[in-house]
Length: 263
Image 1 (cartoon, one colour):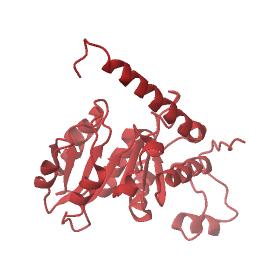
Image 2: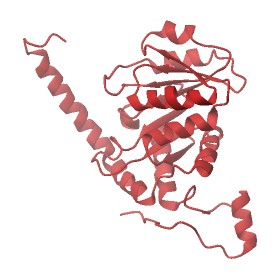
Image 3: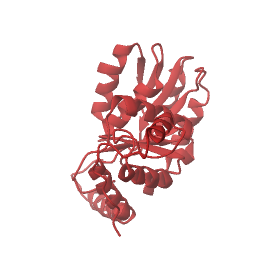
């Protein structure tokens, strides 16, 4: 009925040879809780299934997930196109920190598809958007932006990364609409009760390997306890999102009847 929490920093090996095989990747299994933990792995596997991705990797917060994605995939000289309608700290991360490492960033209006198209460059590594956006709730056609990303000419490929924090996989699955990676602040609806911080990135095995590699070295790790809380959140996520949607619709209908409200 309830998964185990593994609050341990490291794991036991039967021999030095087994330890060496684990560290080299020849033998599967847990190594060190900075990048392998059974409770965290359970959360990653379940959220990957819900999003329709091959694999997921979690981080200490939603921003840690976005930071890990940036530092895993970007190189000096790369270019990013980002929606202006993103969480404010995402904007700060790109403008103040990612730019310091020789990466250029172009900001565009989320629903202006011509701006996405015209800002595409041969060195554009990825397009980043959040839909619905936090806090203004702007909504974009993910499939249409994915088609623009496919026109990119970056030598490693031009990707579309979607922050799916507000809809969750219950209401929206960006990977099925052409996105390459999905990121979440699990702090929001995945937990749903304001108990702890966490983030997650979902996508193909190849791309998540890169993000996991940064997390292994950089260490913005999700704790086993927080992963366990998120596992509990996933059990009620569908019910909660249905209730949120029904309540929001009732409020919207009521607001439409108020003469003092223009929009």
